[in-house]
Amino acid sequence: MATVNVLVLRSPGANCDEETAHAFQLAGANTDQIHVNRLLDEPTTLEKYQILCVPGGFSYGDDVSAGRILGSLLEHKLGDLLKAFRDRDRLILGICNGFQVLIKSGLLDTQDDSGKLLATLAFNRHGRFETRWVHLRMRPGCCAFVTEDEILEMPIAHAEGNFVVESRSFLDSLTESGRMIATYVDNEGKSGDFPVNPNGSAGDVAGICDKTGRVFALMPHPERHVIPTQHPRWTRRGDQPTEGDGLRLFRNAVAFFG
Image (cartoon, rainbow, N blue to C red; front, side):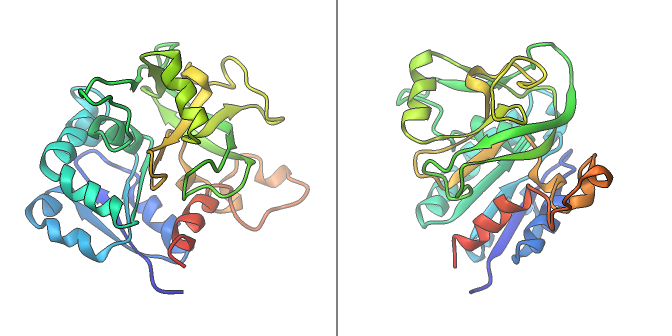
């Protein structure tokens, strides 16, 4: 298999770049952590990479709203470059704050032709920061990052993860087109109110992809469950797995280029 190079995008306030780079390394990729200012100064830097990841944290302090400043930078300064990157069969991943960034950058196809937002991420319905472990139903759909229909466990940590939509028809279109990739469920795969759905997201949405399936974003943190001992009940498991659930997403991304 050819070496896969991953660019993990750093920005002021982002704080999950180290863990995310480590996750991709465990999956067999080479990783570089590059600040957004360097990419703005040298856009051709992106050419050597097959995967771009926007990690979690609080980019630019979330001063305006979560992910908006970095999302606007990417849209207005690097929008054409990132779309060309995607169209060359490259992959883009956004995790937590990265989901907020990508949805505000327009890369997740959540706007209509006039630029009107059809979906965004708002404050959690109960109005507070939420950190807990959740179960996710993963459905492959058209997404390069997910290959099996399964239930995975990983943690969340966010205040603005409530996926809200302009209309029910747009939510239905995500399902029909195979773009609704991750939804919150319980350990038996059933949907439910809080805490199963920890933020009030419409349709229990935890992650979606764009129309090409090569841009994927989710609110939970797969990079925080790549080894078994990161699980809060690891000492009480009967059968200890060899790796954490989140590593599957990173392995799938690297295998896409195999």
